Structure formats: structure tokens, C-alpha cells
Image 1 (tube, rainbow, N blue to C red):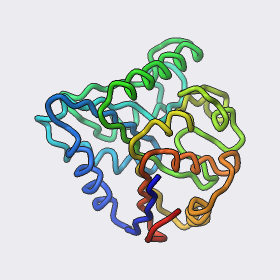
Image 2 (cartoon, rainbow, N blue to C red):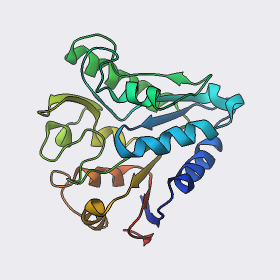
Image 3 (tube, rainbow, N blue to C red):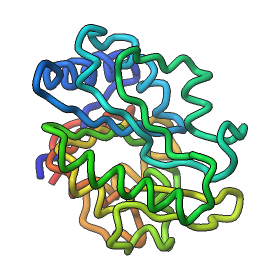
Length: 224
């Protein structure tokens, strides 16, 4: 695994970089899977989507890293928030997590989607944020998502019922990209440069991707 920290306070720089990386993988005969988050990193996803070459988007499939379970279109849905914020990728295959089914069926369908897409894609990439508690996607410290061997899990996290990819799914990615800013996250970025149990800092799972680049406002240079 190759890990690097890139220091920047400009999300435009991050979206330019991500656009270049994804665009280089698009084209005839190629299949690209892009996992998109909610939360603070959502801004980068929106900016990137606007810059991708429209004539190549037929090669692209996108879905979420995690979702808040509920009826399709419920106000706390990450997918709905992305749409409302301007996510627009004409020609791409868009696969929301919520489909109106019960929790178990929704999780199973999401896991099947991840399995199929990671097997078929010529390139897989995920955009992630990191929380002040060290979580990433919907993988909270101490939750069942931390140790699951499945590609997706669902569980009651208190405020929300969460459906999320797992460390096992992250391990199937060719590349993971993180955007994390704010002083409250600086301690977690320091921890990410060390080897810690995933149970304590779920963001450690991002190191299981083939390549990890962490854009942040705190530190630069190489990692492990």
C-alpha cells in the first residue's frame, strides 16, 4: 500500500486532482467504480463530478460509501443530499443504496452491488472523509462494521440506522482518497500515520486500499 499526505486548504485542488485520476481511467472498454461519501467530503465529489469529461461518463458507475437507512428520499439520506447539492453525471450509471426494501434486503442488495462492481470494474476508487472520532464511511469505532467480513453491513448507530461498506470492501479498492479538514481532525490524522487497531480508529481500514492519498489542512509528506 502506498500512502501519502498532501497538505492543502483548497478543495478545488483536491477536486482537480481527483478529476485527473478518474478521467485517466475512463474510456471505451473500461469500467470505473467510484464510491462517494456524504458529509464534509461531499463538496469535493460535487466539484469533481462537474469536471469529468461528459463524453466518457458511460464508463462510470457510482454509488455511496454509506447511507442512512429509511424510505427512499428521506431528508437525512446521503444520496438525496448529494442530488440536492448538484451531483450531475449524465450518462453515468448511478446506483443509490436505498430502494424501499427492509433493512436486511437493502444491505444484501448493496453488498451484491459492491461484489459485482468490484469484480467487473477495471478500476475502483473511493472518496472518503474522516470524522473527529476516527470513523470513515459509516464505520464507527466499536461498531459491527469494524470486524465484519461482509462487503456491507447495516446497524443501529443511535441517531441513524446506518448502511455502510466495510474494511473488507475498502480492501478491494484500487485507490482511496481522503479529504479531511478542520483542527478537530488533526489528532486523527496523526493517528492515521501510525499502526493502530481498526476497532479504535476505523479510518485505519483505508490503508487496505491499493493506494491512499490524504488531502488535509494539517500535514504533508509520506506516511507509512
